[in-house]
Image (cartoon, rainbow, N blue to C red):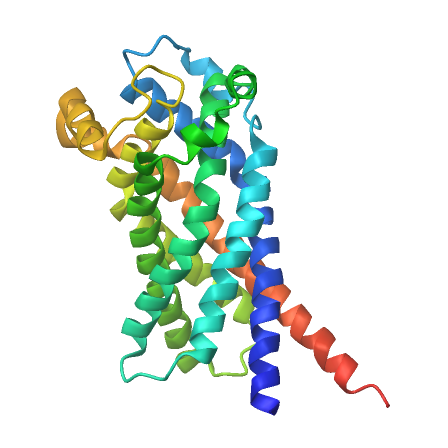
Length: 287
């Protein structure tokens, strides 16, 4: 009974901490993501009617933030809640790394399905500002465009591999750190953040091609070719400058996810520790 109560508390803590961490890192690093998206759009969508100069990379860098913030808070909460629910309530297995990968896959699948529409809105506002949203409200077709198969698939082929790599590495680095520093280490928040930064950078570089494919498909939402297939996107991107085209903005993305990983996992661990202390203080109050 006591173990069940503790497991439930861990899941609740992770829901709250995950949401706060997602919102916090999105608020701080949103401008870097906006610049990266504009850079990719300018390079990948050369035939688009929309053009902007390099100086416009830094204008309206918080456009679309409220949609992204809402999506990040809920999707991050879903991810961590699902991750810890499955970790605590699924059977124990011999290979922990394999279990982590499986749980990360399921958690990211649920998280991405919720986040994808908000990501489509966000990226189109980033490159087109408010005119994009006005177009959709006028035509009552927001979710028809955001929830089509190709856009959701483009999101999943980037986010699922990213999460599997990042969270598997994060857990491995955390366990290694615990082994070196001890379970009662006072630097768990810092350790979690550093592990998140390293794993985020590695995962970002590996999944950079999928990120460019996703941006290309997402930002076609207002053009005649709005329902671009994955294969068509790959052919078009490769035709621009070969393999190099799949790594446009990869440095910015790696930088963003390194800093983001440090803040995200550090903030998550900090919130989690604070909630645990708060619950513990309530339990020790005299009845």
